[in-house]
Amino acid sequence: MNDKKTKSNNNLKSDALFKSVMTEPLAAKEFLAEYLPAEIKDILNLDKISIEKDSFVEANLQRQLSDMVYSVKTKAGDDAFIYLLVEHQSSVDHLMAFRLAKYTLLLAERHIDKNEKIPLILPVVVYAGKSKYTAVRNLWQLFDNPELAKKILAGDFRLIDLNAMPDDQIIRKKHLAIFEYILKHIHRRDVLKLWQEIFDKMSHAVLLDQQHDYVYIRKFLSYTDAKVSEEKQEQLTRLIIDNLPKEDGEELMRTIADSYRDEGVNKGIAIGVEKTARRMLQENTDINFISSVTGLSIDDILKIQNKI
Image (cartoon, rainbow, N blue to C red; front, side, top):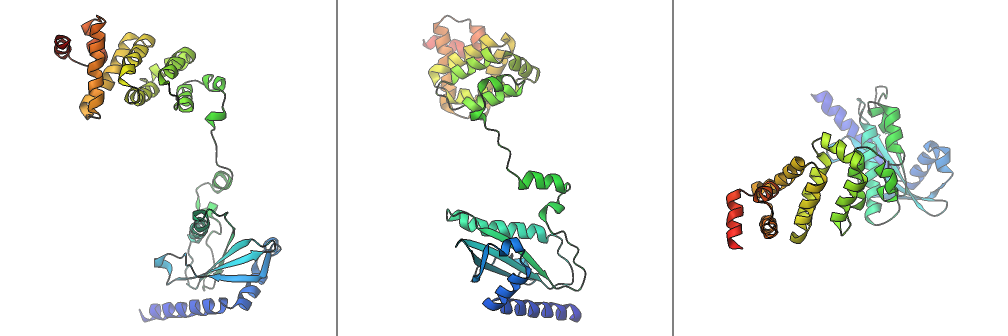
């Protein structure tokens, strides 16, 4: 126990020594001049070094690590950061690469929050433990597939720009065509026209959606029915009934009506269902058909009819 306490005290003393020395501009300049890669030194002006006061080391590591953050002017006059960590433990921190990546992002975030461009950030670790340093030295080596992880995360993120994708290209796709076409045009004011285009232009995708229990159409229908005005809800119902097999269309609309009642999402929508039934009654629509579409019972429909 005493040996552990002695080691801990020695580590704290050596951390304090390192930090004390590295706060001297001359020491910082000589240290960086000695160990920075040539391509980095070529763009830095080591005569312009400032010590940053902020600490980015987690509280539970502050007794293990001494962190030094320097801001260094580039020869072009821009800011750069050199982030130094020193570890004096006898054991190796195998997650150091992960911690450095996190600290680097914290430094970057400070500039993002100020609407500034992110300066150059270079992590450096000074290790003075007794055992051989065996931890991985980059974040990618912590992944199960380092090469693929580096390719995915270090490169440009994958952009699927539906706005720039021609409609014809989307329509030629199989089942996914419905989803992508809806996403691209979801902000249209006339959402009923969008529905008609799906049925007119993507019958192949609609058939595939039917085989998958209308996974896309159900989601879009729930979204649409809650967005359209009460006057257009009947038009939406007609669109579904006219363009899908009768039983499928009726079941879809019944599911939507049931969800309103079961979840109590919006009283206004429930009123809209009743108004839809009233309009259909006024058009002498068959009561059984109205029941299948709205989900209302025959008794409920007859009560509405008596109020007309």
